[in-house]
Amino acid sequence: MHILRAAEYRSMPWKNGGGVTTEIAVSPSGAGLDDFDWRVSMARVEDSGPFSGFAGIDRTLAVLEGEGMVLDIAGRLPVEVTKASAPLAFPADVPTQATLIAGPITDLNVMTRRARAIHTVERLLISAPTEIRADADATLILCVDGGFRVAGAAPAQLGPLDTLLLGLEAPELRLDPVRPAMLFVIRIDRIAGND
Image (cartoon, one colour):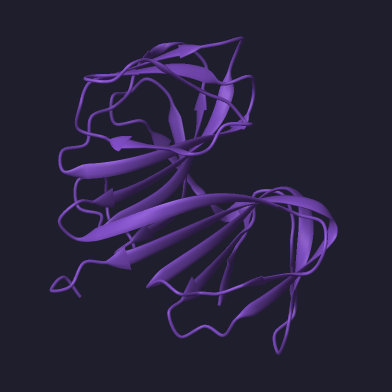
């Protein structure tokens, strides 16, 4: 179990130079934009415009802050993504245009290299003790709002934008919210033969 604190995340320019992204975690450690197996990040989107393209990458996007945006993804009908909508999965290597609904937003991006890993992203609102199983090669629990304590042998408390990173061998955890907490649970599995 590793706690990733928001104050320690690494910021860098977008691939297309149009903004700044904050990297929460990447595998392998220290990988760049062209050689990661998986990457979890947040981005501040100030203006409407095109998304960066990532060849061979699958992406899931969720809105953390702001009114949201409409995504025009090649081959699909435009879709509105807001704080209330489910995380949206789409290929990161097709042309994608974002139109902000009402001002800047912050979004969550989860990306996996299609030949090496797959992922799921689930939004949870917890107001009572909740059990979480680390049933993937990597499980990340991002606290968006509120806060929670991790019960057990190594108790810890997480606040807004802190992340808990768990490996496959991690025991089932109990999260005790200190106030109602909005979380994203990200599960990433390596594809067999790519260990």
